[in-house]
Length: 194
Image (tube, rainbow, N blue to C red; front, top):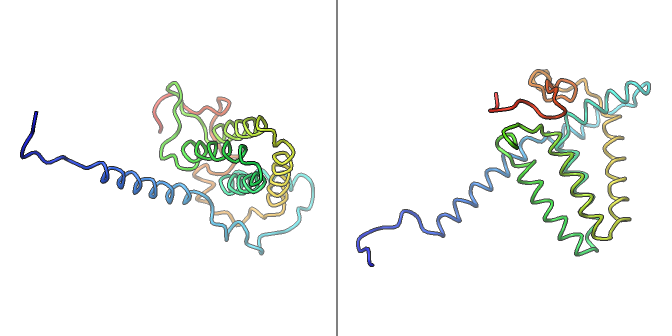
């Protein structure tokens, strides 16, 4: 059957361009939620903690504040350690796609069975799955050394980075680690987002 005179609403090429355009916007917006690298590496904000309690408090605040930056740093170190293991690199790239869609580029909170899942829970589950799948590729030593290096860098940075220059808007909006109002083991709410 022919349909003369009808004009298709959109061509497949136009739909692909729209998808790519939306993906670029989501990448820009998703990476925009990370903290500026200049703020993270402001050398005037580094000092040694006076005691162990100060160091632990600083680590908690900084991990909550620079959570996405720290995830990017650890994933980059892990990626660099897998350059000479092609199978592990393929698994890592697949897991990075999961990280991008489930953690870095989400516009809305993740909903599972009608419940909103907290970002920290998503990050922990993705981290565990990434490590488990990579360990199954028999690049164990590279992975463990990379994770150890990443963890040491994060803990050292978080311990020596002062927290008194964080804006009060971030603390008031609940972006700091200690100000979360969730109480259900990482699951917040049970329906629509507030």
